Image (cartoon, rainbow, N blue to C red; front, side, top):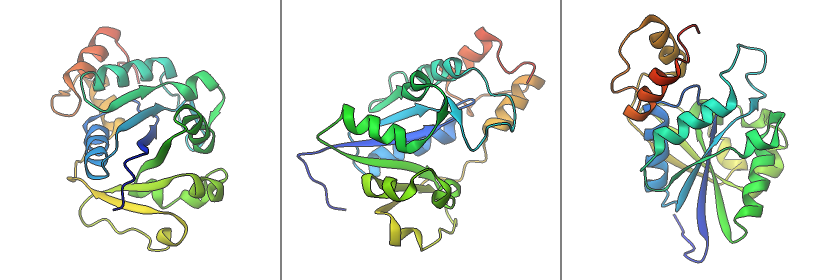
Length: 201
């Protein structure tokens, strides 16, 4: 992996984060370490176009506060509400352009899971996006990635442990009063307990 030391290496890890869990955190810190990123922006989606109409999302500002709490003290991870401030549907191309303006002397990396990588061709202005960023695909052992991605994207792969955890399961656990230990950071668990969110989800 060639690294230009004159450029700041910025990772962009977008998500609904409803809520953020250890799987997201493990992906972010491993992407940062293995790709030698200076910073990973955890970008909270306002209205993710892929999920619009599928279910009621937790208020975007609340999801952002949870992300801030979850990564407090984690070096190199930074919560971003740029998509919330922009309003409307969240498209990665718009976010990448905004990050490029904020960090003009930078190399940008889009951090995605293997499942999301399989649908990149459906993303808004994906061709333009592929010219602006390199791709960091976070995958679990044994996951198969479509080889054609490498033809259109500058791609690196980061392998992480297989963690069977999802935001859907987390919300169900809160609703049912089941334990959240080791699935969420302590800060996230405390925030959920204080705010009472997900109890009726």
